[in-house]
Length: 210
Length: 210
DNA sequence: CAGATTTTGGATTGGACAACCCATTTTTCA
DNA sequence: TGAAAAATGGGTTGTCCAATCCAAAATCTG
Image (cartoon, rainbow over the protein chains, first blue to last red):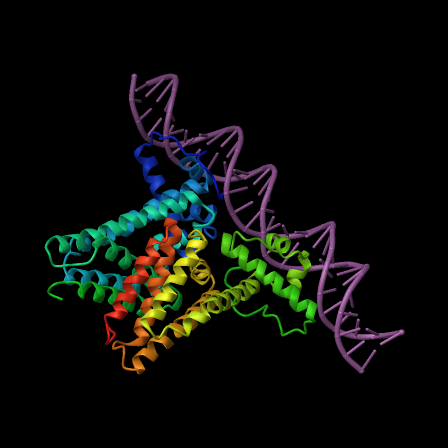
């Protein structure tokens, strides 16, 4: 695997319903395993077994591990955004921001502070050895940031927030990522809570009805 | 490698001056390679070659790759703290905090935003598969956080800061880590700048001479 | 200086894993 | 319904790498 520029990109193939389902199962299994163990420790043999397919299926749907990895990053980005989607719509009030914060903390508690951020963990692992995967993770974060910014922008447009929504959104995402990393390493949720609370307080200080 | 509970801990051996120097060279080479490529992609053959030693030396000084990894985490923690040490002493004023912020940004620029945080990257990679290494990285962060807290505590003790220095230090470290991760993935320094600026503004808002 | 200990060299082994192959079965669709 | 395409099964291969071994050289210490 490692650095691969362009070759091996699978051409759009015609997939039957069954084929799509099998492909999906492989990606989901790979995502789970890469999340639990990291990319390099998740072997294709593990993926194969977890997905309940034979070795040739994996290579039938993906030209190599790299291509599977890219699919996993895409899949995790979508999962992370989907999970938060109901909360994103309400990020245009301090109450909504606090509910979002609470949900993130709750979720980490449920996971016993394991795993960290699916995008962040993958991104960190591949950043220096795999340019394509790095860009995929970066683009996941761009989408995430845009969702946060959208709420802050709405507050700003209503005249309830002064301060740059772009910068506040980026800073909030950074605080979240750093909080998740420290939480993952310390196995306690406090770093995430404190990081998000500080950033929300910072935002609140810029609201007109502060 | 992977999960190893206790066995293989090298008993304190008597090292000659030459032996100490060789050991140091191995750790430094391993630290560099693991920083550039990650733990799993840095093979002992690479380390061996980079350190200019033979394969048996590596196993003479470390019982296995796991033990070398732990030494590397220790080494990187010390490096990161040593590098900032002159700045830590001045974290008890807003000017000192800003100089610290500027130095971190400068440093990332010099690295072309590559590599991220030496502790954070290692920690993220090993967090879910290697409890001992996870704890080592976590303890590195504890020391880092303590250094930041010490400055804020001094401000607090002088009555120039209200707000919990512990929480502010932890939130600042989280913002820094998140900023570094996003900077590493996007290959631009803005996320780090914005994240640190937001946190410093948050701290400034709690100073009496705000 | 001599015996013991530490340090070094290079070759080897055993296992793991990504990637490939061919044959067989199932599904599609004309 | 029958030929083409897609999906599946499982074995194989070649490489890479952590870890081990057997000496030999350098260094320490009494």
